[in-house]
Image 1 (cartoon, one colour):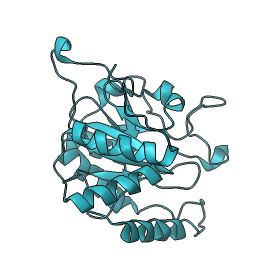
Image 2 (cartoon, one colour):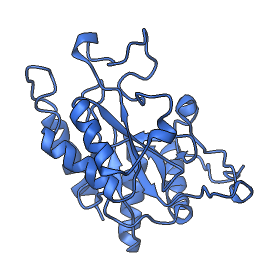
Image 3 (cartoon, one colour):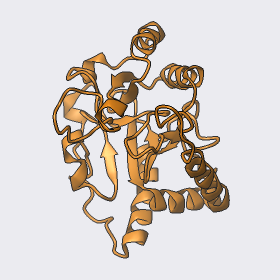
Image 4 (cartoon, one colour):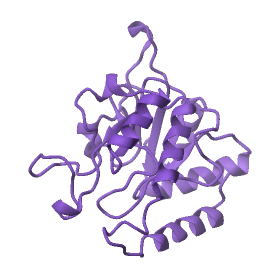
Length: 243
């Protein structure tokens, strides 16, 4: 687990690493190519399906590498519209993408092998403190520009009749509707470490919370995260979260 002091100190160090400036503005902000490849291949080996995504581009003022004018989600969306079927854990395919798209960010498609519970960073800190105090296990946890991403098992199943909807379900086009707790399940995705953002932030695993950790059941973790979000908002949001 990561306590408040360790988490806060680590986040300050990551912010300090972004102060460096290189030829492309990102030289001191991201891992080297070898580290990038190792991180992504480790995630795939852990069963997290990956697909290439757009990246911040110096040619467009550190906005988006795609050709879309006024891209609404610069540097944070999949390259292909078929990302849900494209996402894979096949190391050979991923290595080919890494060779042919050396600047690409990567997303992981949720609702296939895992889900992601996504909360504001402060709520994530509160939840990690509580889980640490209770001795509860957490799975992989990443930070992404003001958000904390908790990777969990998925509630999506092959049987459509067994799947149940939730008011917290988050899709790429509805993220603005979920400023608090988001549940990335079917038809959603999150950026994977070490993706770069136009802000200069880098998506990163919390120390000791990498993709090799077992994926926990989302429901017990959801209760803790809901309480943490309510605490920072000063109002309860726990009732009626199931659609």
